[in-house]
Image (tube, rainbow, N blue to C red):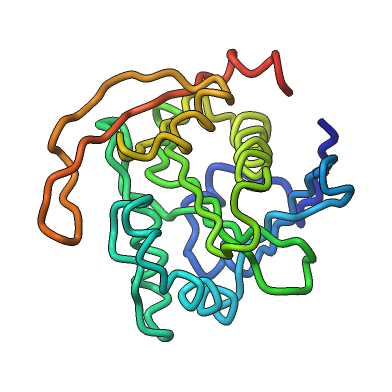
Length: 218
């Protein structure tokens, strides 16, 4: 896997605690090669108009069953959308500024989805990660796995995170297998623990990846 980091300036723990607006303005670009597609794509912080684009793509009922939350937002509810994609569940996670990145096939165009670090605990050096390919045309084409890989390496190598958690609906077999293929292991299954938009309680899988477990694929 070929990776390349291009950052505006070195990232410090103080930067992680800065305001969300500053995070958005940093415009960090993480480059990733997609060999099967014969091209590269990018992870970058999103302008407000790009978040609105994701909100438009999220008007898809099938996403609710995959993600476990109501994906329908008004175009101007960008803060609410970021809050929704930044919810966390692990006991060690903490309320902190999330680090959301758009997934861009071209860094000058709109994103096709997002990947986010959330619940950052800089005392324990832990975080949770979430992802969704919102544009149907690009689902199941490898972008999700590669975007996760790229952000995992960034979290471990640049932010010095030691443990990354992921919380997934037990019914979402494709996502569970994707995380297992990235060496995440199941830590716990929480039955009837996640309130779905329809009022039902869904089963959740808590998975983890340790920093010292990625040597096989980095």
